[in-house]
Length: 99
Image (cartoon, rainbow, N blue to C red; front, side, top):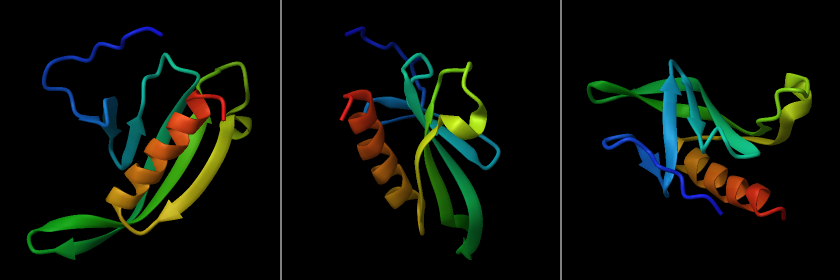
């Protein structure tokens, strides 16, 4: 198993990188066979910020020879970012382990 190296100061969750682009968060190493994609579909105000209250989670194959819609292995929707990251972490680990 190869050791993945992330840049110092890069945001990670449970040892895997997090990359945000707008309201989409990619979780995992793009060099692996699978990655998680979290899309923030709804937000609600809390004090002086907006918190996600609807997050779509998808486990995707990184094989670019497969059509995008066929790359989706699993998907669900959660009511907050913590629950979404938690299920993404569990599903991604299982998928990468071949279970």
